[in-house]
Image (cartoon, rainbow, N blue to C red; front, side):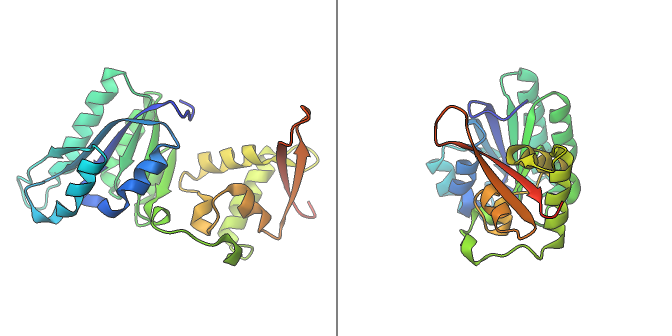
Length: 239
């Protein structure tokens, strides 16, 4: 299932492993991918630990789903969310799911949803285990939803991991002359590394990030329709 602003999405929040303080930013991010047709937050709402969620649930029309903790040390919330997700999946009325948690217990759920041809967006902290991140089509670290960085103060040219990621993507989608469309580069990186996001490096857009890299050459080519729109191509310098 391709990304589409009209995709009907289910936003399922593991309130035990998500922060209420970024609820507005989270739903704004979800809006980039589609329409939040279902919004549910799971937890034991009889405890004081989740009291910070109350105002956000009302404000954003998120349905709280009560799940008592029957046994100490067992996460009943995960089971409740997974059961609801499978019910929604089999109803066949959705295009994708947004799973909000830093818990690796949802790895198999994400995989199962994708096996059915639906898209999965994950949202969690940087501590989220790699298996859950990799199981999603796209994973957004919630830390970047909490802050705004000044791109002008960032220089990621010395970041070896970023350089390897960008260089391998350019090589994978480039033509014989070494030039690669930026859109293709971005698509390749996301498929290979779902957690990749320019905002992790202080930039809102991939184009701004690559322009800051001293090993990447950027070329803008105008559309043939006479408009001011441009295609952006990149290649590794001295390639």
